[in-house]
Image (cartoon, rainbow, N blue to C red; front, side):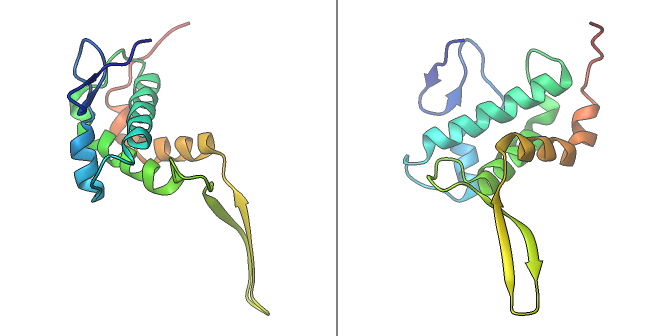
Length: 130
């Protein structure tokens, strides 16, 4: 419920979360602070997705690199923080060259990212009976 930023580096309150803003910016090749809000959103989204998929309260330490790769994929492919939404090619014609684009739903892409990393995440998934 509460979000604390400790030294503009870690997201979380009361505990250190898996993803580090400075490290994520470094692996993405970003400098400055203009994209920090978008990156923080991506980091929180990835951590939430992992916690929900694995049915755990904290992201397991063994998924740290997987979380960084997921965050990088989401940031690069969803154009987080940009006014224009990501476009997906829906049709392609070679004769007289016609290409069709449509907007891709962010939850749809998040689910596809989960599928890409499902084998790593599955090792940490806990069974929940409801």
